[in-house]
Image (cartoon, rainbow, N blue to C red; front, top):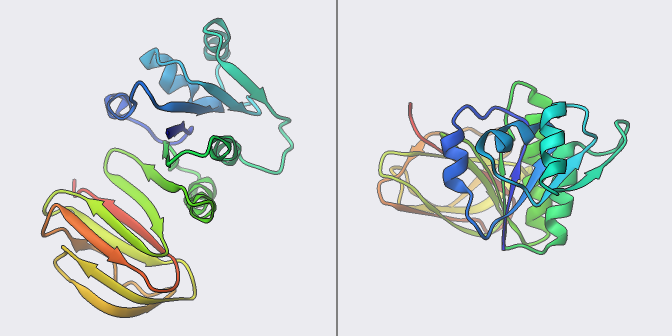
Length: 212
C-alpha cells in the first residue's frame, strides 16, 4: 500500500498533485490542505488535524462526501502533518509520500523533513515531493530514478556518515566519509537514469531537484 499525505504548504500546480494520485492510494488530508483536494474533487480517505485552517466550505464538502474526520484540540503535542504520518504508519504501508510539506513556515518545513526519520525507523519509505523536488532519507541502500541532468544532493543528518558510495552521477564516490555540516554532496547530477547511494553507517537526506 502507498499512502499519500496532502499537507497545507506550497502547492501551486494542482495538475502535479492529480498526476501523482492513483486509485489504490490511501489519501490522508492534513487540515487546510483540503482546499487542494476540493478543487480537484478528490475525496481523501481521512481528514485529520485541529481543523483551525480548513475553510468552512471545504469542511462541509468533506462531511457531505462522508470522509472520515479525526479532529484534535488546537493545543496539542503534534503538528497536523505528524498526526497524518502517525495514522499513515498504522496502516503499515510500503511508502508514505507527503505533498505540500514545504512552505513559507521554515519550522513546519524542517519538521516535515524530519518526519522522514520517523518513517525510516519504522521501515517505511518516506518522501516529500513538490513540482521540482523529491526528498527522501537513507541509512543503507537507495536507488533514485531521475532524468540525465537532474540534480541530486546528499546531506548528512547524523554527526558522521561513513562509507558513502555514489554511482550513476557526475561525481561518483567510493567509501567516502561525511560529517554533518559538510556540503560536498550538494548539486551532483544524474549521468544515468538511475543513481545508486550506499551508506555503511549514518543517515543521509537525499534530494533530487530539477533545474528551473
